[in-house]
Amino acid sequence: MNTAVKPQILSREEGRHMWYLGNLSTLKVNAEHTGGQFSLVEDVMAPGYETPYHIHRKEDETFYLIEGEAEFVLDGRLYRAKAGSFAFLPKNIPHGFRIVGDKPARLLVMVNPSGFDQFFAELSEPAQRLELPPPTKPDIPKLVETAKRFEVEILGPLHLFITE
Image (cartoon, rainbow, N blue to C red; front, side, top):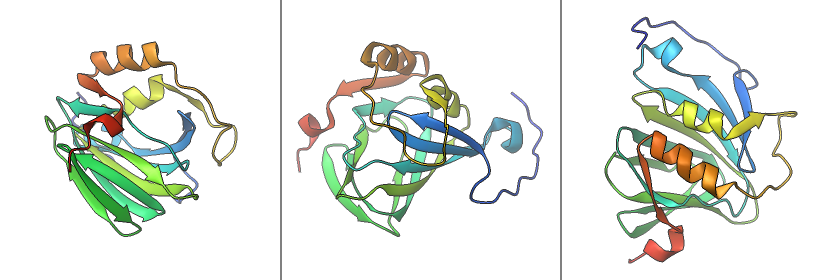
């Protein structure tokens, strides 16, 4: 792991832009800049986007919802979030989220320690424009295989795990 910390100042338009499962993700910093401490991504997510219910074995995730609405499911409990909401999802706790409403959501996602940005990179393609890509169907076998390599356990569709 690179232990050097490099200062980074970027405008909103700067970063590594990727189309990830129908969303626009912009990697702002990763291990190269933070000495492995964290990665930060700005995501613009399409209405209706939903993660599977899953468990990270190595990383904590922190979300700040800038625009739009989302629902987070943490350990079976549903939490509704609007712009300005914050969510901390620790490793080893089952969770997932979905974008609700008819407008895209914009979020900042910090993952610590860094390295999970490589998961997104493997499942993405370079963004051709700074906008949401055309809708696509996920390659589920590739998603599951990539998740296993990054020590993420996929438990199933999010809606099956909402208990409260």
